[in-house]
Structure formats: C-alpha cells, structure tokens
Image 1 (cartoon, one colour):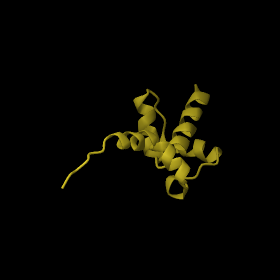
Image 2: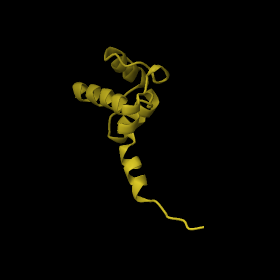
Image 3: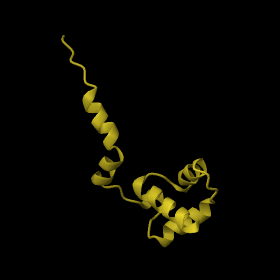
Image 4: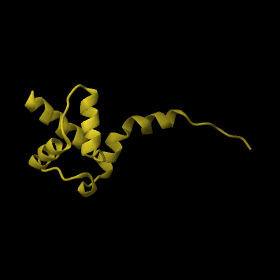
Length: 82
C-alpha cells in the first residue's frame, strides 16, 4: 500500500509539473487515499523532485501534458469570409 502511494505521488508530480503538494493531496483523496502534505513533500524530496516553484518545465513536458487539447483544437477551426 505504501509503495503504491509513493508511486502515485511521484507519477502525479512528474506528469503534472505545475501541481503542488495540495493539488496532489486532493487528487489522491479523489481516488480514496488520505495523505498529508508533509508526507507528499517527503516523498517528492526523497525522489529528487523540487517544490513547484523550483521545478523546471520543458517544452516537451508542456506539450506532453497538453497533447489532447492541442490536437483537439486543430479539428475545431472555422473559416470566416469577410
């Protein structure tokens, strides 16, 4: 159980680089896990992940996180004749 929660916390932080401790805590609560912010902070620190303001977001990470929205936007164009 603990290994599963550690894995979820690290995966959420890596997949969503803008999520802080509170956002991760809320997401875990939505799937039925009650974890404290300090526990999340310790897990991320142990895995070498910095707090949100200190994490860098590369273009690759940004595009991976928003891939679905960017792809969907290409299908919803409207031709306007003026």
